[in-house]
Length: 111
Image (cartoon, rainbow, N blue to C red; front, side):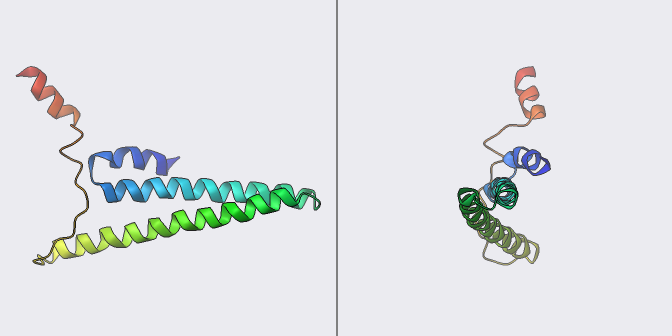
């Protein structure tokens, strides 16, 4: 739940943070589903469908979390390059101009 809240809040920062939290929410959901299906398979050893679903959920969760890791390394590299005043900057997809904040909307309505 906290990752979902972080995902909503990251909509005003950049695309990379949003991708990190979106894939994190999906990955955690798939891993929770995998554990649920494993418990069903453990409860009834003849339930091979639940074991197969659990296996697919683990693979899907791993894929989502791999994308999370890649996006995390991308934002880390972007922050390191910016903090060292490196002449090359990598794009992170700035969203601060797309979604206006409450204070910016209030200034527009007052003017």
